[in-house]
Amino acid sequence: MTPVTIEVPKPNSSAAVMMLAKREWVRFFRQRQRVIGALGQPILFWLLFGTGMRSSFQSGGQDFMTYYLPGTLALILLFTAIFTTISIIEDRREGFLQGVLVAPVPRWTIAAGKILGGGAIAWVQAMIFLTLSVIIGTVTPSIDLFAVAGLMAIGALTLTALGVSFAWPMESTQGFHAVMSLVLLPMWLLSGAFFPVPLPQEGGTVGQWVMHYIMRCNPLSYTVSGLRQLLGGSAGEGTWMPSLTSCWIGSIAFLAITFSIAWFIVLRNQRARN
Image 1 (cartoon, rainbow, N blue to C red):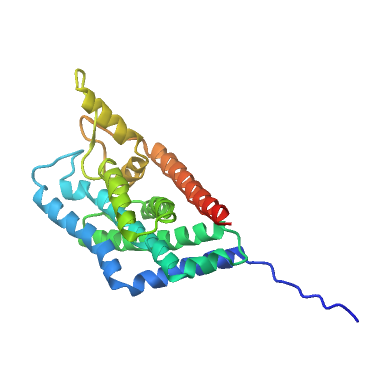
Image 2 (cartoon, one colour):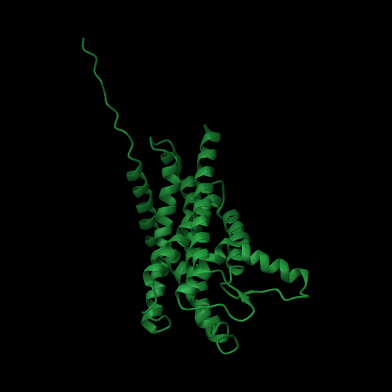
C-alpha cells in the first residue's frame, strides 16, 4: 500500500500581517465614535487653545495657533494609537487573539499587523487634518509635504507600537486607559507640542534644569520639532530645538526601539503561555 503524503502549505507571513492590518482598518472605521474621538478632540483643542492664546503667545514669530499645529498633528497620532491598540484587549476577550496565537504563523506577524494597521489609521487621520490646514491657509502649500507625511508616518508607527507594548499584557480597558494617561499624555505635553522647550538660564533653579533635560530627552520631542521645522517654524528666543537631521535620527531610533519592545513582549508572553 502506497503511503499518502500530505503537503502542508507554508504559512505566509506577509499575508498574515496584511490581514491583521486590514482588520484593524475596517474595525476602526466602522466605529464612528472612535473616529470622531480620535480626530475631533485634537481639532477642538487646536481651535479653542489656538483662538484663546493667539494674541498672548509668540515663539519664533508664530502665534499660538500656528505653533500648536504640529502638536495637534502629534495629538491626533497619539489619540488614534490609543483607540486602535485598545482592540487588543477586546480581541482577547472575544477569543480572536487566542485563535491568532495558535495559527501557524510567526508571532512577530501579530505585532507587525497591529502596528501597521493602527499606524496607517493614525497617519490617514493626521493627513486629513493637514490637508484641511492647507485648504484654510494655516499651512502654506510650498512646504515639503512629502517630508511631513514621512515623519508623521514614523510617528504614527512609533506611538502605535508603544500602545501595543502596553495593551498586550493588559486585562482591562480601564487599566490600559490609566497607563496611557500616565505615560503618553505627559510625553506629549513634555515634547514641546503645547509650549516650547525652555533653555535654562544661568542661576536657574534645579527644577528648571530638570524640566529642560526631561523635555530634551523625550523621544517625542524630536518628532514634534521635526514637524514644526518642516511646517516653517523655528526656535524662539530662549528656547531649544534640535536640528532637522537630529529629529529624523531620533524619530527613526524611537520607532526601532518601540517596535523591538512590542515584538519582544508578544514573543515573551506567548512563550510564557506555552
